[in-house]
Length: 284
Image 1 (cartoon, rainbow, N blue to C red):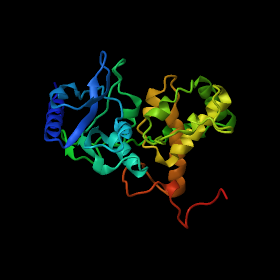
Image 2 (cartoon, one colour):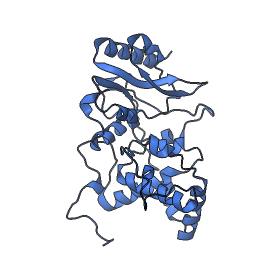
Image 3 (cartoon, one colour):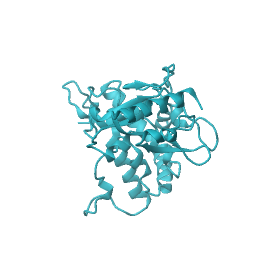
Image 4 (cartoon, rainbow, N blue to C red):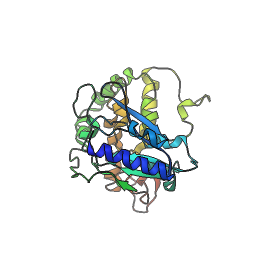
């Protein structure tokens, strides 16, 4: 057992015994190397918590299932999870006073099947929690991700017909399982428009046109709010390169309104949620 895992369990036990938190959301051991979200409510069960190289899931969105907790929710957070918490706070889906953040520095996680570092961790820009009530372990060195928009620039170099053909083939594969929506901290509407049955709203058929409408609408919905955790792409069962699309919108927003990363600070509003007199207006 790693020192950090032991310290995590010790910290969790103290928080539960003191009554400071009602339960703790962390990672638990699944089949083989896999881990899955676990909810620990009793001090005697803190051994269910694990911290290893396969703790992939982003956990913050599970707080939405309990908006009015009797006690604080203990939440394990890495860099990506803490950005997700900030995103939910800015969207009024979570109150900071309702969560106790257990910070865990993270140098990246591995695919439980291949044993290789997963793409979202290779592209991670923030390995340490941005905010935590208690830290488990020492902060690690931040490496950044200098190639943040490399894939987008390669896509922009293609002709319009080539880009359309690429994305058309991608959305031919989409099965509309909505896993990307369900896992995304920025996709946090209480009722999603795709679940509406009103005439004229998103169609329910699984075909290229309606799949493209869903994909583009979701991408624009999270536009400047995407925290770049890469969970949407990781959980997609047909392997859609969704971060290419998300980062295209982020790149455009950066070029139009200045450098911005979502979920870094709850006090800094997303550029598309504000208006300034000196905003670019070439589209008008």
